[in-house]
Amino acid sequence: MVLGRMIAEFRRGASQPVDVPRSTWDALRHNVPMRNANLILAARMADIEAFHVMDVQNRAHELEAAGRRIVHMEIGQPDFGAPPLVAQAAIEAIRERRLGYTASLGIPELRQAISDYYRERLGVRVPSSRIVVTAGASGAFLLTLGTLVDPGDEVLMPDPCYPCNRHFVRMFEGRPRAIPVDENQHYQLADADIRLRWSPETRGVLLASPSNPTGTTIPRDELRAIIASVRRMRGFVVVDEIYQGLVYDGEASTVLELDDDVFVVNSFSKYFNMTGWRLGWIVAPETHVREIEKLAQNAFICPSAPAQYAALATFRPETLAVLEERRQEFRRRRDFMVPALRELGFRIPVMPQGAFYIYAGCEGFSEDSTQFALRVLEEAGVAITPGLDFGANRPERHVRFAYTRSLEDLEEGIERIARMLGCPRRSAQA
Image 1 (cartoon, helix red, strand yellow):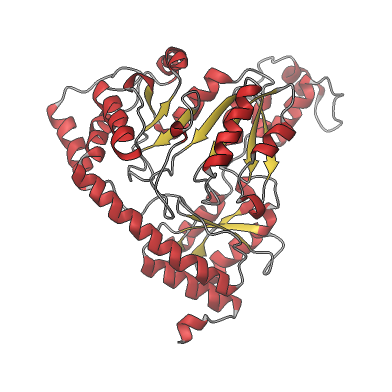
Image 2 (cartoon, helix red, strand yellow; image 1 turned 180 degrees about the vertical axis):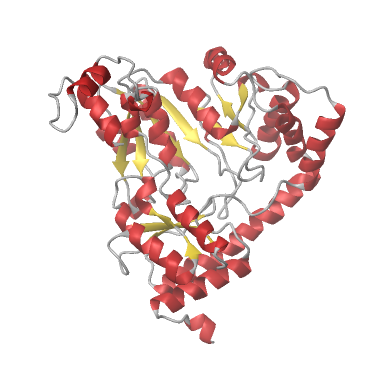
């Protein structure tokens, strides 16, 4: 981080710092190879941060290695494995198919299966020609933003939001502009925010519904208004629908019901429980599919072939029934966790409508959420995520809980935190 900022200063023509040798300064400034090649960094690295939650997870693993039991609520990874038919399909593909590179856009069967899913489950017609299968949702974001963002282009997004979003924009020399949002607008951007913050440099907006870390969704009318405003300003709209299937209040929906000219990113990792298989997809306007394909050919060649054939099984009726049971289990966990945390004194002004996260205010216990998260880990043996990962909008006042563990584990974690805070739960005493 410090070195990256130093490089950025070099390129702005800053004067030589007194603590940097002249030879090092000249070599870095003119991109001359040095004896220590590790000192060469792109200026963008000053703005790309590691996940702070990994510090918590690494410490949790150290404690576990020392014999302590840790209740994990820090990582957004479902505790359910891939559905049985998916695992079986992967094995069959490896054993029976001559696997190799596939088309960069994905195998035709999977693109059609995704198209059928939109029609049968969501009531939206999306031709398979608009669907691009990708190496995870991260690959989908990189391909989408690589197609849309030029150096200096500004992309609006809410704060808090998924940390990679701003980094994806920065990778293409764009400028992420995070707009603070709060519970009064369900931690989501409103059309008024877009119209107020749009500038001559603004190129588009990146939204998520349901969102990470808050689990909130964007109301349909608000989303329609945002799309209309961005269209008038000749910009683009990218909507992260990775948690689309994990909605607990109302039916799952898609922005594609409202408009065909938006870009949608989705994933097999969350609702479909294929975390680590690295498979996602984009729905793009027909006009952009060929451009995305060119980037995909150069950046990834193709998504994982075994994962693609395995993913075909996610759309079978038996698998969808399993996924629905698991969605209901996530809902039960949410309905336990939110009131339990509120009872302990965490501030949760908005009920999460989807995903599997709770973004909770911890200001009643600490003014430093990172130190608080480490204290909860050390004293209670519960791993949670500090708000610092999700932006600059009062992160020190928030922590994120992921209810991606069994209800029994979540109950144990709550009891541990209650004891640490010295406030036994009323429900536990009853």
